[in-house]
Image (spheres, rainbow, N blue to C red):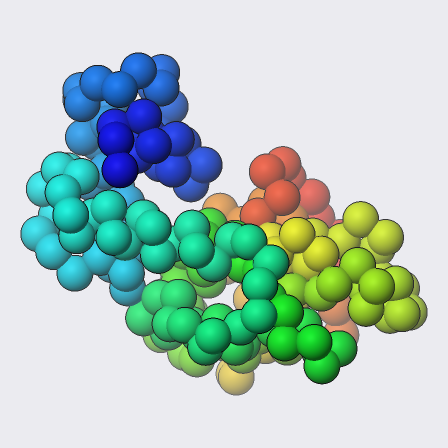
Amino acid sequence: MNMNEIQEKLRCLGLYTGAIDDTFGPLTKNATGKFQTEFSGLYTGKIDGIPGPLTQAALTKAFAAAAVHKSTGAQLSEHFNENEFVCHDGSGLVAVDPRLVLKLELLREALGSKPITVTSGYRTPAYNATLPGAARDSQHTVGKAADVVVPGYTPAQVAAKAAQVGFDGIGVYQGFTHCDTRGYSARWNG
């Protein structure tokens, strides 16, 4: 993986703000260190800001989850497995934005390390269309959303913590909380 590819992946994760210039400078080192810290479920090496082989392998693994594919049951992070996000239509298809997994790990930590149950992750557009009340352009259809339940917490309490850890879209429903990484802020009650 060359430096341009590393910078592009770090930018997609929202960690790198500099130019894609194939240069390892302070911005790239800082973004790499953030990745190593925030994706500790995938990266097991020393947090040094150097995009060496372990960092590159973790970046590759993080992005392998983003495309729609048949689930292999891959471990996406310390506490989340690809199978938790599989579409409920029986197809076995899944897509998961790496930022969604990162934010779910941060949410779990903010909630005192309570387990998070993903009740709905990826949805094929066809399956999404069969669900009453589902948005036609749902973030679920692009792997950027999870509906979650956390024992001991109300959906409103989970939503408050989700806002603190930086989720973009947050919806409070009677039995679950919707969290997504859409790229802009949105709040609602369902």
